Image (cartoon, rainbow, N blue to C red; front, top):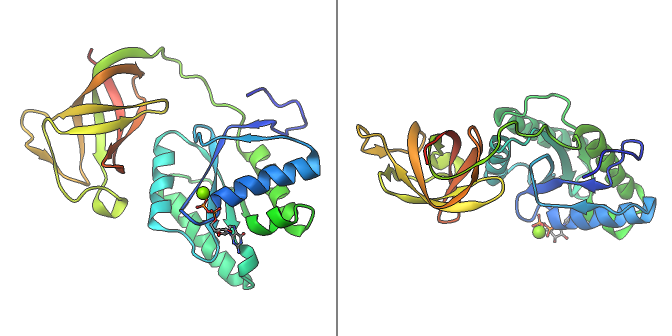
Length: 259
Ligand SMILES: Nc1nc2c(ncn2[C@@H]2O[C@H](COP(=O)(O)OP(=O)(O)O)[C@@H](O)[C@H]2O)c(=O)[nH]1
Ligand SMILES: [Mg+2]
């Protein structure tokens, strides 16, 4: 991604579009592409990477879902710092007060998940209507969204100042999500195999608990040792998420690389 040379307009946008199923991610992706090519003759590539920032899509008729809250928490844990909110399906809602209530609910959730800025941009729009008529007023909302992305999401983040090591064994601080956060309702034992997702890759590994601990329960934080089944690039302090059976069950941060 190059530096900005077009009056702050990004040509390549390494942002993700996140949000609950059915809230309009696919429609919004299409609407952004169509509106930008129609109005500005600018091509844009959107990725699913959430390293730099994301557009959070929330349907204004449904509001925030528990899975949305989990996605926000995970994105924040993985180091994402900037989020712009697109309240979608506003063509279905006439009541401005209701929209403001939905916005308050989302702001509250973002705050709880660690996005503490009060300046997080909110755009009230309709991806579907913008896709139907990019030159109309809903198309203008897409332009507003992209202006907010240009202004609010920086082009790149500082480089990691550490060289990655190639290893299979490390210690880490982990927090196992409780059931309300989407975690398991059962404990974890020494020797359990789980999936470890780093920014660039995922790999299976085995957890080793401290000798005096029999079991870790959901909702607990603990220092453990993890042995991966194959070597990957990793740096100390790198965040990762732990998955089991397609569900995110824990958040971790690398402490010391052992091997
Ligand atoms: N009324 C209305 N419907 C929308 C809007 N955006 C998306 N939809 C509809 O919502 C449904 C889910 O949209 P989709 O983009 O597939 O959601 P995704 O699962 O988040 O990718 C589809 O039927 C869309 O046509 C909108 O702005 N207004
Ligand atoms: Mg989709």
